[in-house]
Length: 256
Image 1 (tube, rainbow, N blue to C red):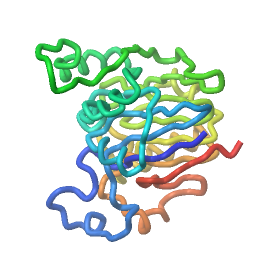
Image 2: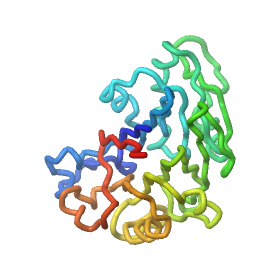
Image 3: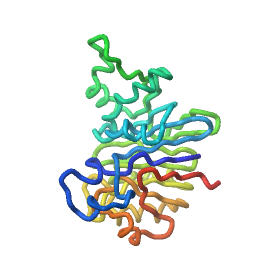
C-alpha cells in the first residue's frame, strides 16, 4: 500500500495569509502546507480522501490521472470545497463513487445543491455515485483492500476516520470514542490529527495526540492538519520515536 500526503495543513493553509511568523516565512518546503488530503493506492485502486480546497493544485502537482473512489471525512470547507474539480476526471472516466457518513451527506446536498438538484444545462457538473458509510461497517473496493469507517468526534461533529487494511487516517478530531479505539489497534501506520501544542476545543493538540498514540501503539504515526504553530525542523524534537510530522508530498509505504 502507498499513501501520499497531498496536503497536511490546517484550514487556513500554511503559510497563513498576512502572517510573518517563523513558520510562515520559512524556506523549508516541509513548512508549506496545503489543506489536508491523502491519496491511497493499493491493489490497482486509487482512493482520494477529501476533496480539499486545494484539490486542483494537488492533483496537478502529483500528476493525478485517475481516481476510483472519493472518501469524505466530514463536510467542512477545507475538506470538500474542491469537489467541483473532480469534473476533469469525470470527463475521462465517468462518474466517481463518493462515500460519506449521513451528517456529511446532509451538508453536501445543501452546499452542492446544484449537483444534486441541477436547474440549468451547460457548464458541466460533477458526476458522482453516492454511498453512505456507517461506522464499523467495512466495505471492499477490491479483494485485497478493505475499508472500515470509524467514527471520531470533532468538537460535537461525528467525523469518519478510515482504516485501509493496516493503515488508518483520522483527521479533524478532539476525541476518539471508546467504541472506535479497538478499530485503530494493530496498525502499521496511523495518520492522526494534531493541530498545535496548545489545547484546542475541536482538534487534538500535541499532548493528547501523543496520549492516544501511546495507547493505540501503531508501528508508525504521522501527524497532520498542522497549524503554523509547528515548524517542521524545529519542533520534530518534541516527538517520540515512531512519530513524525507529515508534510506535503511525503510518501509512506507498507513495510509488511
